Every structure is written in C-alpha cells, then in structure tokens.
Amino acid sequence: MKKMYTLSKFLLISHLLLFSTISFCQAGLWDSVKSVASDVGDAVTDTASKVGDTASDMIEDDVSPAQKRQTIDNNAQKTLSRLFEESREAQEYYDKAKGYAVFDSHEFAFLIKTGTGSGVAVNKIDNSRTYMKMLGAGANIGGGIKYMQIIFIFPTEVALDAFINDGWSADADASAVGGDDSGQLGLTLADGTKVYELVDTGIMAKMSIGGTKYWKDDDLN
Image (cartoon, rainbow, N blue to C red; front, side, top):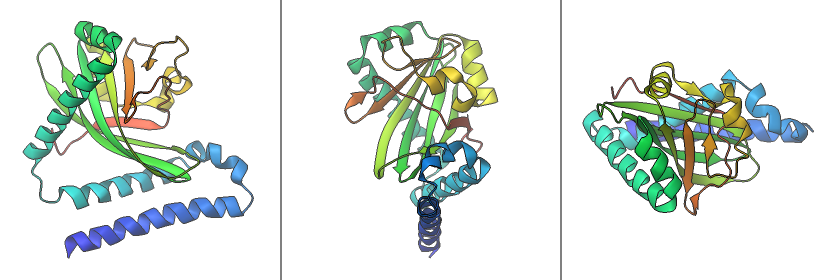
C-alpha cells in the first residue's frame, strides 16, 4: 500500500511538471523555455527534489544503508574501469589525483529535464569515502530517460574537501557551464579538477553540467 501511494505521488508530480511546462508553450512563451531552468529557480529545484526523493523511495524502501553504500561503491569501480578503457588521458589524471567522485544519474528529459543521482567521493590518500547526492535541472527539447555517469578527478585535497564539505553547484562555476574549448575530452574546472561524462556511446566529447548540484547524503554518512 505504501509503495502504491508513493508511486501515485511520483506520477502526480511528474504530470504537474510536464503540464506546467506545456502551458508555457501554449501561452506563446516558447522562446523563454531556454531560460526557464534559471528563472524557475527554487520552484523547479524543489519539484525535482520531490520527484527524485519519491523515485528513490519506490526503489529503495527495502534496501539498507549498508547495501546502498555497497551498490554505490560497486558502480563507482565499474564506472572508473570503463572510463580508463575509453581514455588514457583520464587514467593519467587519475593516477596523479588526490581524490575522485563518481555519480550515477538518471535524467528524465521532457520539456524541462530533471536529473537525480547518487555517488561517492573518495580521498585516495586515506581511502575515506563520503556518499553524496546530485540534482540537475535545465531546459530540454525532446523526451526520454537517459542514464549517465559523471566522474570528477581532483588534483588536490583542497579541491576534493571543498567539493565534499561545501557542496558544489555548476551554476556557480563558469568553467563548468561554459564548457572546455581545449579540444580535450570532458571539462577542466578553474581549480584543475577534471570532469567526464559517460553515456551509452562512450565519453561525451563536449559537455556542460550547468544546473547540477552536489551535496552530502546525510542518510548514508
């Protein structure tokens, strides 16, 4: 009964989000869709958070925190192995890095896209682990659901600690939103952190992670 209620709540929120977006289009405001992600601010973020939490509730009702941590760790290791197979450059950055973070994200793409995910940030010096959440919102034309992995490789402990303890928002980092024109794969942030995005077809050559936020998962730490 609880899962049926949770599923109904999730579907209702999803429909409200979609119908609200369509109403913008019908009102002749389609040209403003590209700015909806930033203009909608807390409203979209809050709705996306509720959708993500509801989806997590449906999937994880019977999963213990220890099992969740183990699943996240296993996914992170598999993702790193795949990344290194795809890019020798990424392997070289990782070998010199002080830490890394790996996130699995499900992106629900309608007219407004919302992406929710979980991951782990690891200090390579002492192997300490911090489990984290992610949320993204932005304008999108099209539909569907996409699965992806986001990998951060931190050159210094300072960069890693700031990411973990302060959280991180791509909107506050122009280098993340603007992209990397260096010709290399992924992004290079202002502090030297490398960011890669893996999808079904491999590493995204050009990417922008604007609209995404990362923070500690209090339930798993």
